[in-house]
Amino acid sequence: MKLTLNIFGGLLVVLGSLWFLQGINVLPGSFMTGQIQWAIYGGVAVFAGISLLLIARQWRNDGLPRPHQRLSSRYKTRRSRPFRTR
Image (cartoon, rainbow, N blue to C red; front, side, top):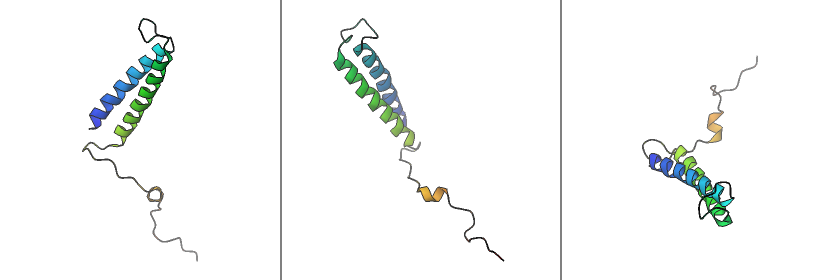
C-alpha cells in the first residue's frame, strides 16, 4: 500500500507540474498551452499528489497506519518522583 501511494503520488506531482506549466504557457507545444483550465487541473493534481505522498509517509511497512503518539508522552521525565529537598 505504501509503495502504491508513493508511485501514484509521485506520478500526480510530475504530471500536475507538467499540466500547470503548460497551462500558464511556460511549456509550449500542446493543445493545453495557454489554457488556464489546465493550470487549475495541474495545481489540483500537484496538491493531491503531495497529499498522497504525505499519507504514504505515515504508513508503516506492514500496511497499518502508525498509532498517534500523545504529545505529553514524548516529554515525560525519566524520574517518576520529584526531586527531594533537604
